[in-house]
Each structure stands twice: as C-alpha cells, then as structure tokens.
Amino acid sequence: MKDKIAFVWQGINGRYGQWKDGLWLAMQHLEKDYDVTYHDIDEDIPNDAVVLYWEAPCTINGQFADNYKRIQNLPNKKILLFAGGLLKKEWVTGFDLLCVESAINAKECEEQGIPYVTAFGINEEIMKPSNKTKKYDGIHHGTCASWKRQWLVGEALGAKGLVVGRFQDSDPMPFDKCREYGTTVMDEKTPEEICELLNESLCCLQTSDYWGGGQRCTLEAMACNIPVVVMEDSPKNREYVEESGFGYIVNPSKEAINSAVREVKIMKPSNKGRDYVMSKWTGKHYADNIIRAIKIVCV
Image (cartoon, rainbow, N blue to C red; front, side, top):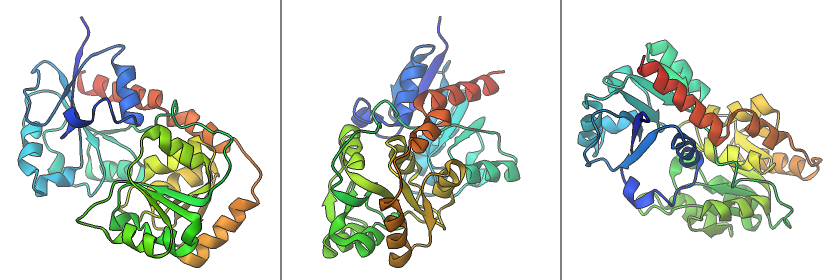
C-alpha cells in the first residue's frame, strides 16, 4: 500500500486542475509513488497521512489565523510549504519541517533552529523557449501588488512594456500607473499563454522588492531563455541571476532598468537560462526535495 500524503491549500478545490505551476507538476510526480489526496482548509484530513500545507507563516496573525492554527494542531506529521513573507520560529511550532524556496529563507531557518529542506521549482514542461517575434521590450507576470512594484515597468518601458496578472481591488495602483504610462496590462493568463508572452518579450523585468517574491516568474522566464532584469533589493530573485550568470541586477530606477534593457538587446542568444533551470529547479527537483522532507519527518 502506498504511503499517504494530504495536500492542503486554502481554495484548493477551486484551483486544482487549473493551476499548473511547479508545485502542481511536483504533485503529479508524487502521485506516482504516494497516495495523494487534495483538501481545502475546512475538510477532514486523513489521520494517517503526512500533511503538506502551502501557506505563509505570517497567516497566523491575519484573518485566516484559525485555519492556519487548525492545520498546525493536527496530530499528523506536518510539513509547511513556505509561501513567502516573514518567518518566526514561534509561528511554525507544530510543523515538523519547512520546505523553503530561497537561500535567504534557508538562512533564517538555520539562524532560528527551524528544520528545513529547500524545495522549489517550476513547470518546465510548459515553460520552454520558442521562436516568436518580439512584441515587448519587457514583461512582468504576477498579481497586481505594491510589493511587486509593477509601476516600474511602466516608468521604464512605457508602451513597450507588458504586465500580466490578477488585478486586486484592494491594491490597484501598480496596474493603474502602468496604464497611465501606456503599458499593456493583461488579466491573469494560463501558463501556456504566459509562456507565449514570455517568448514574445526581449526580457522579463522582475520589479519585486525585498518581500515581493516573484521567484517563479524569474525562473519561468529563464526556462524560456528570456533574460531577467531583477532589482538589487530583491535577494530571492538576485539568487538565480547571481548563480546562473544569466540576466542583470540593477537598482529599481527607470534609468538603470533602461540601461539593462539596452544590454539585453545586444545579447547573443544563449541556452544558459534553461540549462540552469533544468539543473536544479524543475518540477521533478521540487518533488524529489519534498520526498526528502517526508523521509526526514517520518524517520
């Protein structure tokens, strides 16, 4: 009989089968060796399953705190799939281990004595290079949010820029500013559509700040061999550019971004981005590291 995994994510029943990112692909790999079930936050969880819970630890202080604490207090072996934000040891008590995405989060875990495994990746089966006519100087894909600073795309690229993502009534300014600058703004797209738009862009302009995340956006562009221009105050994205040597790190200003885009325009085609992703950030890598985490907590 296969060992059991219960994957828990608030809103999972509305999205599973539609989300196709690296975590989705990792779960497809896990289904080959484990009995995997998917659960919304308020559903009964099998008591003999290892729980994988995707959430930000700071949720414990927000409107969904009761949901977070419910999972935190389950008697199961539990792994928190770290979904970003601030990390404090007292927020993750009850979880046997964290799966973190970035080097800075791994460092936080080490400093606070939190057991962790680095586990992250993208859906490299969808995100691939293709020979498309370039329509945009730069693209940013991600939810409209101030910590993603999409207005920098508008400031720097104007009508030659593209931002794509879910609009938020609670934080409309980034997309609204882009429209004022004449930048094309598109609603949330399927992964397949994002791949096509990436390949129609000269670069991915990753404008997120320190807390803005955006690692998936960066790696998806790299998987398409699209150079990434990241901000120097965004360590989660700098990590990939520094390690791969593919892309540019600049200060978050119109002048610095435009200078990097000019460099992109004279770059020779390279497979360096995809080679880097395939070396350690695929859905299979993601799955293998989750399996490593499960084996640690089940010893």
